[in-house]
Length: 154
Ligand code: HEM
Image (cartoon, rainbow, N blue to C red; front, side, top):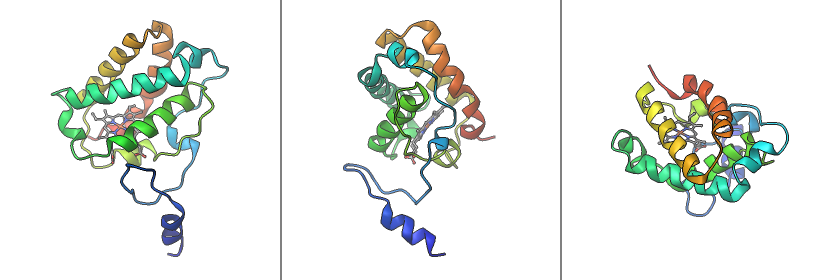
């Protein structure tokens, strides 16, 4: 296969991140379609709001005894960057998503239903802290909910 070394060569590693196995980048990897218009993006306070929410979410997950072990030894610099892109894309902020698909990103991680519930609770707390309205919170959660089938292993 000639294509794999070619992809490796093309894929640059952003500063502070670890290299990952090559994959094809596409917005479809984000796992859902973006919201129309900029209403939802504004409800999340744009890029600054999403940056705060993702930083807070990742910190909460790392500090959460229910799921902290799953994050140990993983690349949190890359996770913060790609999560910010994913949320921006889904919320109609006009970003491209450069990360892996939800299936590829969570493969063999052993995430269970209860872990997913814990992460959603932490996301709700982060959105609440940012002052995102309840209906806007639920619009993001509705986009993420079906991704459960690609994240949770059974
Ligand atoms: C719908 C729910 C979820 C979404 C939208 C999501 C999103 C993402 C994204 C965008 C990445 C980075 C992809 C990449 O590196 O290319 C990622 C990686 C990761 N996710 Fe999730 N995730 C979800 C659920 C979970 C849950 C429930 C856990 C564990 C409790 C989890 C743990 C992780 C970890 C540890 C990584 C880092 C993987 C690595 O560095 O190889 N995720 N997730």
